[in-house]
Length: 85
Image (cartoon, rainbow, N blue to C red; front, side, top):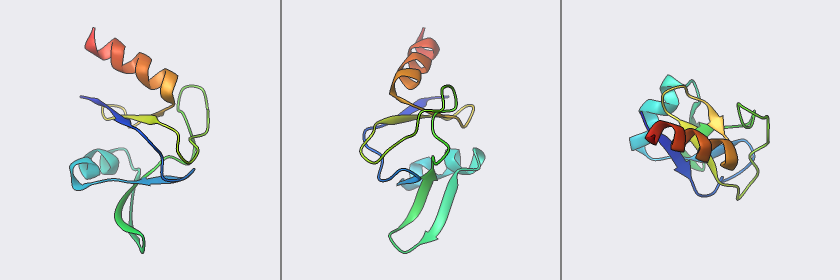
């Protein structure tokens, strides 16, 4: 399963996603819906699963679709490289 890279977080708690990622967000129990600013959102308010780093507005981050973990830039890149090896 892929490790998805997000170039920029919309805010410190959630980022709007398209329908292609809804399945993964739902499986990870990170899907938010029913907001006035959009239809689907990925919740990442707890920050990086590995190191606890917060995901702030404008930060890049990763979603491990296999585990449902949110990862900061460094941990996300490492996880993606690990999977590709």
